[in-house]
Image (cartoon, rainbow, N blue to C red):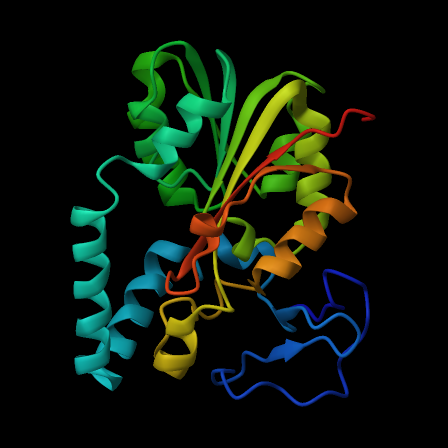
Length: 271
């Protein structure tokens, strides 16, 4: 495990009290300076490759929460399914990709098995970055037929391999909450995007009504995988602090009754 300062403002909160949502040895802190909520002692990158890879700890977490609160968890799952069927008739990620990305290279950070990349139209050259060894292997198998490339490494290192100002788009779908150095990740993304390029962000919404209702059973609490807990205000602040420009962040993208937020950002013109 590592010990880190607040990833937003650099303040040490070691002397502060851990939030009640902390789990076992994993300490969740709210920064006394800027109010950003984060995991103070996240696992090291190398631990996320195998022992703490998300495909392993994610299943364990879901089963634990379900057993702790079967009724509330079941109701939450049902609500998500109904909303997906009645409201979200099209894939929200694909919709944003089609709207904001021009033809060319697209990077999916935390690409998992490469499912989303494999489904993209042929006008996109696909590149995946995935820290889990097993998931990266599966993604390579999935994408080899269309000439896709997968880098098995931390995201910042993977973006460092991309030529500056070369990408049409970057997807960070349920990723930024996992990144130990989120500001550096956003800076690396700004360097890699074309002047007209865009980045799609999806993160859990710590300010959601569901978090207050579900308490420790909220689906956004995933230890130790989730290390950053964004609200609409802190997400916007971090993006703007690194010079990225918010292109789309409507009220419906951060509705209080949703567990997640969507934001589209652009490469700063001065990079």
